[in-house]
Image 1 (cartoon, rainbow, N blue to C red):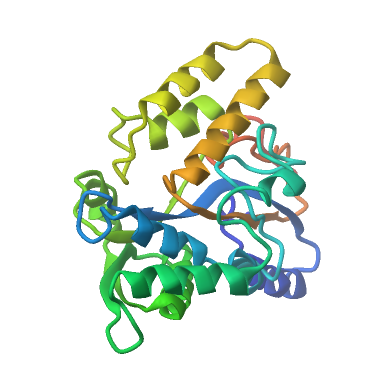
Image 2 (tube, rainbow, N blue to C red):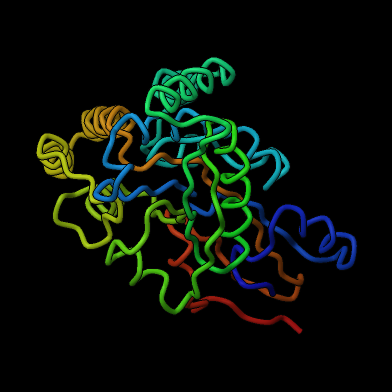
Length: 281
């Protein structure tokens, strides 16, 4: 059996070809790929710079290149049908930065950057930090290429896994490419967007949003809670808190003699005990 979620979509074809009897399950990872920007460091303390970077994102290109079109474009929460709390596409496209007119978005982004003094001959030079494993590095390379379209000249800075999380928690970065997520509003929203969270890597803080996060946590009616979560999603998008690029999909494969394996739900971490798994051989 492969390690859960370890088989990327490009690798899946090889696994199926070389082990035709294997059972493979393709599913969301419940993990988002996201752009993190340290808003306390100049020039990224300027909201317009952050807005320009968000407008430069071509999410469909990320999805097509990394997953052959299988990953999901999303906001903060995983989109349906697997996502319980996420916005459907028709609502998502109304959020700032999710326009289908990419050319117009990038034109606006370049105008912002040029007004701030940047140009093709005078680009904003930055380092894009990310964890030194492929699932982080590959989208970071695409991000760097896309930022060139708005006068941002970026260099990849790979960080060893053993120090990555501590480094971004200490805010020792300017721009980064990160992965995070569990499909639960309390876990996701408190961890990544609350003013007092150590995992709030971008130092985003909005007391109004904090109050809404508390309110949705207290709401027992599922539909009313979803409305609150969507209101938070919209506010986070407007504030460019942490632009979500995509939610990935990967596969887990096993030989037929592996019995009793149940795929994870809500988080990639919640089915690793294998307490009901056995070998029929």
